[in-house]
Image (cartoon, rainbow, N blue to C red):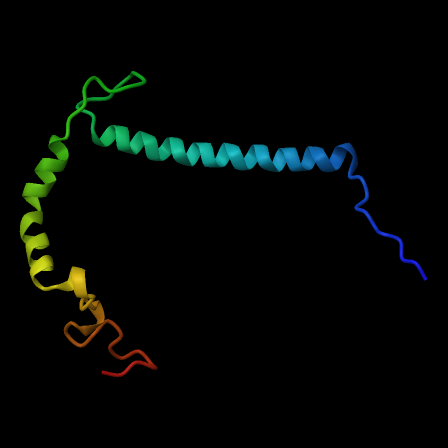
Length: 108
């Protein structure tokens, strides 16, 4: 008894158009998400951006200002002195009774 090899039936023009449409819509969506992220990044470095494709100038002072205002030096120093970054001892659930206080299945 010999078995015949089954091959996939040809899909015709509608099947290939459907695949093409799915790829087109997916590509359009991904392109829009990437464009949105790029616009946010460019805007974060801009001095002023109104009515043109690109901002009038670029600066990093917003990040410097935020670094100073939120005292990130102290935060990073405390984090590195605690050893949390190198030994993995940081656990948000261990502070003040834990995050899961009162949740079923979690005990202190």
